[in-house]
Length: 339
Ligand code: P6P
Image 1 (cartoon, rainbow, N blue to C red):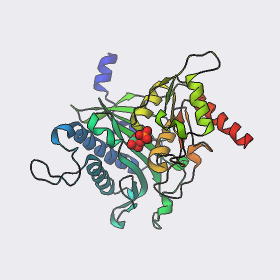
Image 2: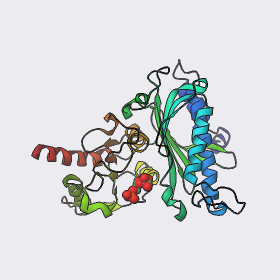
Image 3: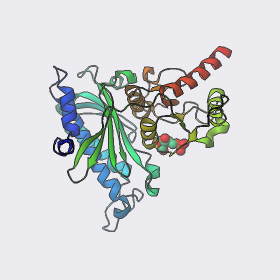
Image 4: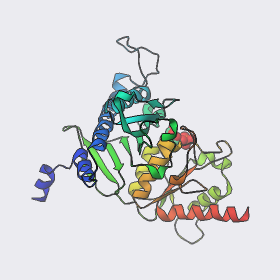
């Protein structure tokens, strides 16, 4: 009967969020409505990404397709879909997207109490070769709905109410936390529903994988170089770690979350503040890692404590298994002491 129960008691993402939200007496369903619009955006992007190769959606913006229509690159299209879905939810007041230089301030008539920061299609340079890509998002409560300024989103990551990503790969997987642990949902295309497939994800305390772009090795600072050296030539007689680097953050983070290990995008001489963006890459992934029992560090502080001053600001990031991040933290602390 267990199998039957599974088949008939489908835990969809909407049901799961509603269950969680009913624990908050004051919740009037606004978060669930907001989330349902994010989920709609993910379903659209999933479908567009899967068709991209056929529909020539991967063409460069400005070219025309066989019907002579203006072609949009997938990331431009995805951004438009998410912006429109979020505004039409009537639950947002400020949007920050990787694709838009300026923040979007929602018209007062449609304004809600949430600020959403997102990368609509992270890793989009990998589309043409079929590597998994994804949408990354974070949700803040606006500080003052009437005095809506950019300061409303320049909040430390620890203020996020929820964060998640949707990975468009062999299957479409949405991983989400609203502060009570991490859950993974897989899109069942026949139902058009995200079904709970990875309840209460916990990252292994220590991993056997490190994930970094070794091509930047000549630019690394001391602690990062020392850490990677230890991964490859451990002094304690343990076996070396494996290197896995996909170059698409959502894919590298998803593997780290499920298998354990550490993902690093350090600062280096070429990019002194690292490459990844604080609001819509570093914060959401750090939020998820902490909720799954791991941790996230910038080289100087806990990632979620960082207070951003610009919406597209970058930061170095080391995130993953608790013990692995602890190791690199001690190497940076030692460097601090010797400085
Ligand atoms: P590099 C993709 O372009 C991206 O923004 C992230 O998804 C990914 O983790 C990173 O950049 C890869 O950067 O410099 O290693 O190619």
